[in-house]
Structures are given as structure tokens and as C-alpha cells.
Image (cartoon, rainbow, N blue to C red; front, side, top):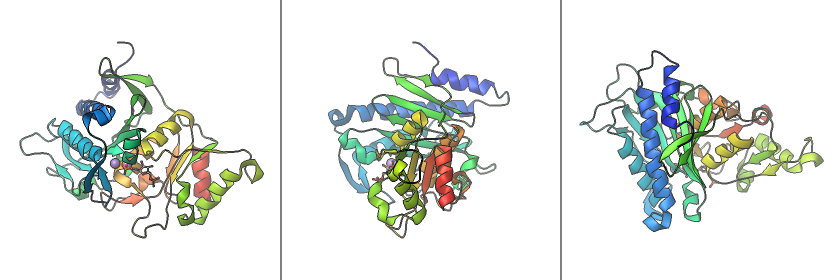
Length: 331
Ligand code: AHG
Ligand code: MN
Ligand code: MN
């Protein structure tokens, strides 16, 4: 095997902090194992009979795919016995998930989206898993929902694994962003994308244009200017992408820059945005900021939002710094 494995990398990182106990390193290893299992299930696809609808809805009233349910169970079962977590919260579960009584508890909390972009699974496009690691508050033995409601700046680590043409894990623990490709022959993640950076400028934007009539004027203005390019007020022409998998969009932005928006819209008065703060917006914002990009609702830095509930939704505008700042300035 060539190169630095994820395990080797995180142990080397741990050694830079002499007071570290190694618990976070072990937790990150558990997450990597869980993502390998999910990668396998996703790539087997129709051969394993895992495509199609599950015939149920989640707490958010979204139709669940079979793989939403399967990957959620895989993730929980890979993580609940290892002793590094005090509790979990999943996009697919109404309530937080306690650690079964027979297993030891650890000092971390995890929030996760087991399968992001699941509307893409049956059409064989990229999907992924997103996670956010928080500290269990001191002296809390059995965490409750309130213990998860920490702003994104408190994240200890965050990452996502994208199941695309190759399986790639992207990780930050607050010291930059690194990408690891799964070597299917050896079953190991190998460091292939060290020090990922988001360029400050871009000529590529990503938004679901079909929602244009529901957006607020600042976002309409920004997107109209991109579409008009050199013929409008901007100094350059823009290209557009929309994959409908946040993992794939963020991976693209980490690779070549760009701006991704799921902004505030008036489509459904009960939802101030589509994406979920704890499972999608916070971890992705932490990663993007660590790579030199920016992330905002248009009015506020996402990482500073005080969460009110674990399934809360927020507007998301993230990516290349100068473009995100421009959109924010229009608000
Ligand atoms: P999930 O599959 O976990 O519900 O998340 C899908 C999200 C996100 O990944 C993507 O950017 C967005 O929803 C796509 O929404 P539209 O279908 O409205 O474009
Ligand atoms: Mn998602
Ligand atoms: Mn999901």
C-alpha cells in the first residue's frame, strides 16, 4: 500500500497535542469504518436490492429511500458499542439516539446525515454521509436533546464521505481540511488530497433555479447578475451546476471553488430553508471555513447560530469567500 492512511494521519495529528487522550482518534476511526460499510452497501446498488422507496417518512415528513433506512442503521450499529459516544442524533430519527445500557459511554456527541442526496440514489449519482462531532457537556451522563444544541463553532470535528466514482472522506478537526480516497483493494482510506483550499474567487454557482420565484430579492439579484455575466454588471461570465447532493457540491467547491446556495425561500412558511443546521449546515460550514471559504445564511455566520432544536433548518450560502461576502452584502 502506498501513501499515508487515514489511521496513520489522525494518529500523527493526535501526537501534535500531547494532552490528547486518543479518544477522538478512535472515534474518527469508528466513523471511517461505518462509512466503509455504507460505501459497500451503496456501491452494491440494485445487486443488493437496496434501491427504491422504503414506504415510510422521516420526522421531517420526507419520503425515505430504502438506503436512508439501511445506512442509518449501519451507522448507528457501527458506532453505538465502541465506547466513544455519549449519544447520537440522526436526520432520520425523531429523537436523539441513546447508547444502549450495556455499552460504555464516551465524551462525544455525534450528529449525522447517513445518506445525503438520497433522491440521487436510484439514478446512480453521488451521495454521501455527513457528520459533526460535539463534546458532551461536563457532568452530563445521559445527554438530552438540549445538550446537542451547541453552535457550530463548538464542533470538535466534522467531515463527510462522498460515494461517487471513488469513495472519498473529507475531514477537519479544526486544523485544515484533508481528503482521503478509499483504496478498495486494501480497505483503507489513503491521504490523496492534503490541505484542501477553496479559492476566494469563482465563476461557478450552484442553486436550484426552479425555486427562483420563492427567493428573497438579494438572492434573486445575485443569481440574475451571474446569469447576465459580462452583459450585466459583473466582470465575467458564470457557469452553473446543480447536483442535488450537498456532499457532491461541497466536494466540487473544495476541489475547484464555487458558491453553493440553498437560501431562504417562501415555498413553505414553516421552513426557513431546506438544509438542516445540525446535520448539514454546521459540519459543511466548519469544513468550508477551515479550507479558507465562507458560510452564511445571508444575514449571519452559520457557525454562530444558537440551535433551537436538533432538526432545525437554515438558509445556506457557502463556498468561495468573495462571492459569499457579495451575497451577504446584498442582504
Ligand atoms: P437529503 O437527501 O439528506 O434529504 O439531502 C438533500 C439535500 C441536499 O443534499 C441537496 O443539496 C438538496 O437537498 C437538494 O434539494 P432539491 O431537491 O430541492 O434541489
Ligand atoms: Mn442531506
Ligand atoms: Mn439524508
